[in-house]
Length: 325
Image (cartoon, rainbow, N blue to C red; front, side):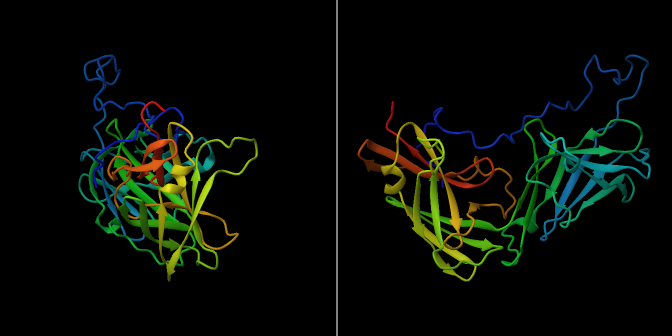
């Protein structure tokens, strides 16, 4: 659905994630001062652009097929290199063997069994020629197997990797690694609230299962518990449904635009599980899935309330106050 009205975001709304495309631009061609520009500073030849096609499998693995000029030579150490954006630890770089796959093609495989920490990973090619690894450009993505992906409900930890094009035109991966995981499905909106269906992975719902909407604002007193609204969970096997009336969060609105995060508690006292939508081929849902902000009467005046997906594809709710509040 497309929102007929938008919620104004104020400084009171907490930033959801720092994992945005804060990468330096990688130019497609050398600039006039680039020492590898043909005819400049000794006449060195600029390296050919490398572009990668990505094929996803239903288990969560990815195959990268790179174009390469026929005279491109690789060594035994050639690798496709994935680097976690903002990471500096030993586990924040993954090297995948890169070898010939026919004339003018190179291939690397990221199996589903290789774990990638949650975040955004930049993709590079290291041909083993002594040069620094070079950023890859995106080719054709075949992500059909990710659409409506439905892993076994008993899976202990769910890994999701979706290739995408950064705002600077480079290839990157968005990775999630969660266990348990509550996958959001259909969202039905009514004037007084919303009903969400989904599926729980890696946990079995028990007595006292519920969903909590938690205000993201800083508690009034240090160490105080967050402001929450709880609603019961209806369970059928691994599938769940809940209805969240808007008057609960609206009645606790304070000022500006306030986000509320949605968590599923599989049982009374159990560790909460973030509700998100990960099992498809859309890497960034915030700009793709749009829901209307509906008017809700409250003591402070008419508020506007509606769901949205965060930068991490987690499901959340916005409560926006009257104009000028």
